[in-house]
Length: 111
Image (cartoon, rainbow, N blue to C red):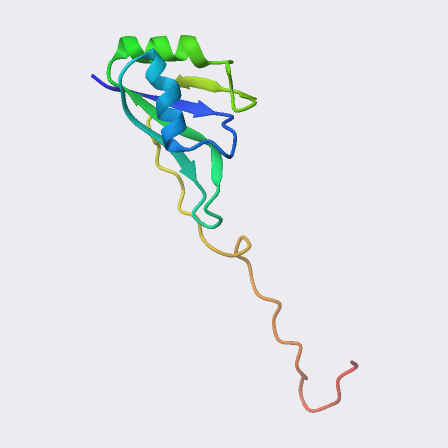
């Protein structure tokens, strides 16, 4: 059964193919993906590699955790399952707006 690995501290220049090629040294790579920022299109500096077997995943962790790739020491461990995260609401944390600075009843403003 395939096992998914988290790969952190990636150089922002590493591609999916480079990640796949690196981990292929440990065995059969089912998938490799560098996570990209939706807004900028740049790498977020981490990714996931799915190895074909538990044994190959263990070998990949042993081979690459702490090893350098593209000038950075990789962090490689077993990926944790995704958890439900609170929905992000846009804006600046809610609260009330600044309100109306308009005039009161009749009279002039002190502005």
